[in-house]
Length: 75
Ligand code: SF4
Image 1 (tube, rainbow, N blue to C red):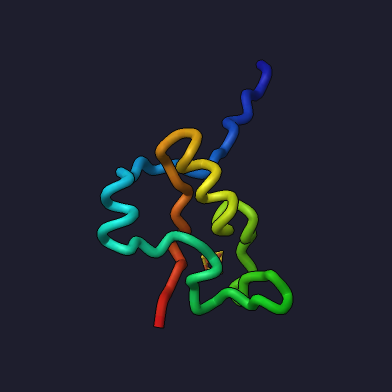
Image 2 (cartoon, protein in one colour; image 1 turned 90 degrees about the vertical axis):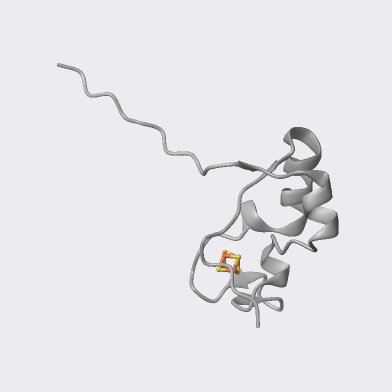
């Protein structure tokens, strides 16, 4: 019997434009306590590419969705 591998994909969550602008929603690594700008890396070792501001805005503009990081933390 052939095994079928499930493809894991990060969840994209919908967000309204009003929500994003009026509530000053925090959504990117650049806003996160764990982001190390000099290294452009996450201090917790997570991949930053899906959560960087440019990528988040690209997704939002194309789909009205974002890939929120569950570990994002602000001071
Ligand atoms: S915890 Fe998440 S949001 Fe924060 S820097 Fe790491 S990957 Fe980015």
